[in-house]
Amino acid sequence: MRIVADKITFTYNRKSKFATRALDEVSLEIAEGDFLGIIGHTGSGKSTFIQHLNGLIPVESGRLTVGETDLFAGVKKNKKQLKNLRSRVGMVFQYPEYQLFEQTVFDDVAFGYKNFFPEADKEEIKAAVFGALDLVGLDRSVLNRSPFDLSGGQKRRVAIAGVIVTKPEILILDEPVAGLDPLGKNELMALLHRLHKTSCKTIIIVSHDMDEVADNCNKVAVFSEGKIIKVGSPKEVFNDYEGLTALRLDVPITEYIAMKLKEKGVYIDTDFSSEDFVKKLVDFYKNVK
Ligand SMILES: Nc1ncnc2c1ncn2[C@@H]1O[C@H](COP(=O)(O)OP(=O)(O)OP(=O)(O)O)[C@@H](O)[C@H]1O
Ligand SMILES: [Mg+2]
Image 1 (cartoon, helix red, strand yellow):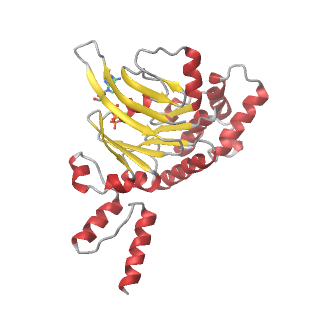
Image 2 (cartoon, rainbow, N blue to C red):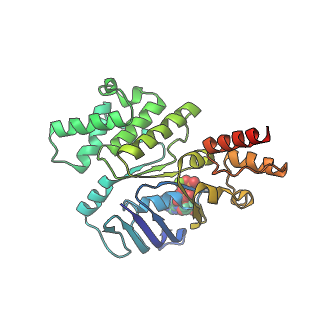
Image 3 (cartoon, rainbow, N blue to C red):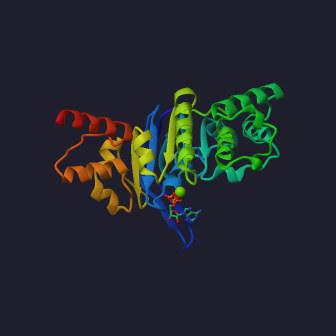
């Protein structure tokens, strides 16, 4: 499913004196198969934007198409249409583990399924829960445990399982690795790549971690003050140290080192992923020798 946003604008508390313009004519195309990174300073509109993509926030003005579903301003969707969309566009909120509430892991993941398919029978639910648990790499032995007794990383996997249990084609995650330790971060990103290869065709992450975006995304959108100010490959977006730091954004460590090397007369032509950066550096070293 392709996503096309065309000049979407959104204002919180529109009719009050506390009105806040959160999105200002945002246009973006997300192709099927993209692994998109959304970056931008705090309050730039990232979370507001992604919540439009499964109809959680109705389009105020502009046009938004998700697959064959039109979410245009003024066009009301009925509950059934929205449910269908949300089963196909999964949304994992920031710190999703805080939303676990059932007594067992099984019930928590099953809730995600029953919510969308209330008529499903026991066998169908069981198959869906087992499938989701396998996809997130959790052992079935956790199924009867309380989600609250698991580690932080495991809880997050349970929460993700509760979203991918409906097999969404598009998976959106708001700061998926926030608060995890370095190993937990790597494991979670590996999980997202596995999902991207097997079950969720399109993945969209909101992130403040530029290394993570450079290493994992094929496309990056930069938000600032409710607008998208740049879209492109990590190479196109990150190759602008001054521009990004002026926006109060970090750059990937690879870009920082590449910039320092350039000051010393060494130019490394890289896409800023750590793998490519190391390869290019080794090539350079071999050529010099
Ligand atoms: N529920 C709300 N009510 C009123 N204003 C809101 C609400 N949610 C967000 N805003 C405002 O809308 C703007 C965009 O917020 P949003 O949460 O989309 O930013 P963000 O880029 O996700 O920020 P962060 O990186 O901090 O998560 C901000 O000015 C914010 O204060
Ligand atoms: Mg946010």
